[in-house]
Image (cartoon, rainbow, N blue to C red):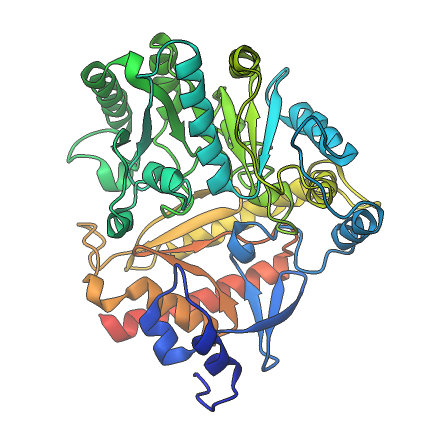
Length: 460
């Protein structure tokens, strides 16, 4: 419970901090959790309370909160060259090396990279690239962006317009020209008697209808997360990208994979597009790119978009866009270390992606076990990302009354038990760090199960 004494950390947080993406009634009742440090997958607050963070911070602290090699890479680069930009034909050697490495580990045979400070900015940058390209190629009407309902792509005005979440209406978004198709969640969106194959076919038919209605020449791209993360860990229906990709290719519309969450091992594959067997025209990256140790995003362009954008930029002499910290040398040094730690192995340790693959079967088995609960309608996910959907009635998939805030109650009860998880809609989301051990996995699910039992006792 919150400490309301005048000089408490909770009171100081309330006095001077404006909260984003935070359930304000919970803060009013419980107070802010103010953290001081972390140990492996655990974080510790100002009162000495210890929490197993089942969200890896915000999907990103996959190497844990005290990885020695990551911190040493940062310090070494700060000592050597602490900051620079990537404007005017100048950039650090670390930036050059990271671009080489990103293309090497990407699905692309060749390409180029543009750096930002976040996934939101990377999606924003991608759209500006596409609008720039349309104008340069004599097709200025090619500006519309297709995404999906429940998809999440960021918080800038453009990336929030791409995001198919209803809360953006409070900002008067989306902007014109951002079109949200049906969320490819078969369990929730499938019609009575409709098979998964039929649902997937319907998603393809909807895409064809939208392209015909809007005009292919007005559509700049289709942007999709391989797995919807902040939508509640929603994998696509079976065969979804195998239906969607050929339709887009037929109409000359680029397919962009937003891999801010799924990139660098979260699904058990290097990239989410590999997990679902499709080839995008560009990839949006962030989060695991630096394992959370530095704010960075990247637009990774495949061969065709690379060539077209290079030709367009050459025609007007420059691409007038960038950020002061684009390609920051410390961020790039950290990203190079993160890729080594996650994908290649570092300092005698095996690649973290090997551990993801090793503990995923236990994660999936525990999720399936909890799915047997009478008020869990669906367990879903892939790799080390999963969600449990709470329902009032399992047979009819009827959700709880929204006023009960069931998922928020579950998350708060987990916090009381020393576990951090995330409520999203009526689901509880888990995305543990890649360093998780089997005993830590047991601890995570034991605490989650205790919280589920307590909350469902109270609300049913």
